[in-house]
Image (cartoon, rainbow, N blue to C red; front, top):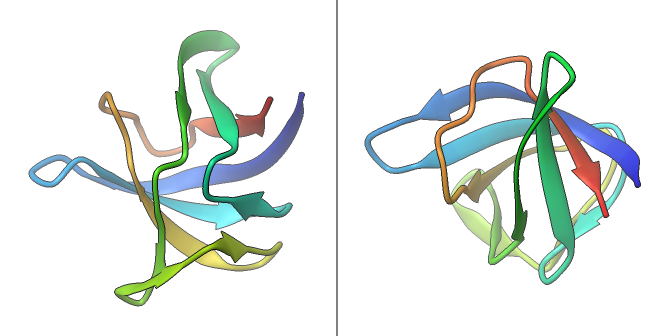
Length: 81
C-alpha cells in the first residue's frame, strides 16, 4: 500500500472527490481513503475524469475526479492497495 494522492475538494451533491495525484492510478485499481490516520473506507476506482474527459489512467501531477462511495474531506490521503 502506498500513497497516490490527496483529496483537494469534494462535491457532495454528485459524490465526486477531486484528487491531486502523487503517483499513478488506473480504473479497476483498489484505493483506501485515510484521514488523520483513520481508515475511512476502500473502493475500486470505477472511472477517472480530467476536465470532464474519461481516462483509463492518470499520472503524478494530474488533478482528477473520481466518484466515491462515501463522503471524504479535503486533506484525506488516498492509498493504492
